Image (cartoon, rainbow, N blue to C red; front, side, top):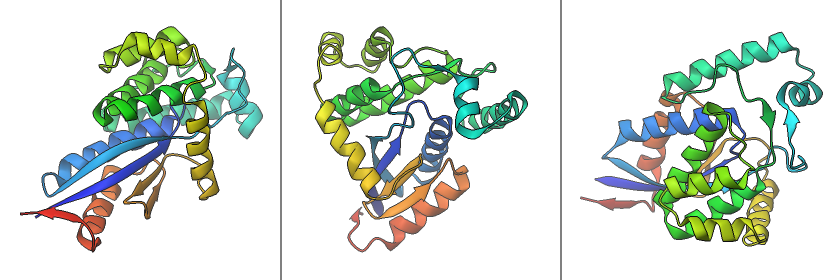
Amino acid sequence: MTAHLKIDFVSDVSCPWCAVGLGSLEAALKRVAPEVTAELHFQPFELNPQMPAEGQDTFEHLNQKYGSSREQQAQAREAIRQRGAAVGFEFSAEGRPRVYNTFDAHRLLHWAELEDAAKQVALKKLLLKAYFTDSQNPSDPEVLVRAATEAGLDATRAREILNSDEFAQETRERERMYTDAGIHSVPAIIINDQHLISGGQPVEVFERALRQIAGAEPGRTATA
């Protein structure tokens, strides 16, 4: 029997734990296959919706937000780097130099989902890599268009969207829907619209949850 799950991955492309959580979830999905399969959708969440276009120095931002010192930030960065490496995601050893606004990235991801769910997954992973591995600016239209093209999406159409307000309203509505539902930190992984897993959990935690949910869903899609 094969159970099919719908997974909404609420996250931001500027969230390091979202990169870790995605890597863990994908590793867990490989472990439970072929008994459990999933349809993955990325939903928008902005950690810093008021961030100006030029962004902010990362140390300054985290110091203002959490009161963390350079040493504390370096320790946290190394811990995240190790967690990422364990699931195949590479964080730059120097860390991200600046924090940027990510709304345009979410607009492109919304469009990508409408085009092809698999291409949305590819775009999300390319944006995470651009920011955390390659230290690129995820609000730069050229970075966004390049990622969309690499994901198999149309570059001209991507540029049209970025040069307009297209999908802005839809993206804002999605953001409000999840915050109104009580999600105020990410990653938040929602399975079949009712089971919530919070944070960048280890692979084993995701694997156990996927197996339990797949086995417990009375209305699951199952094929012999």
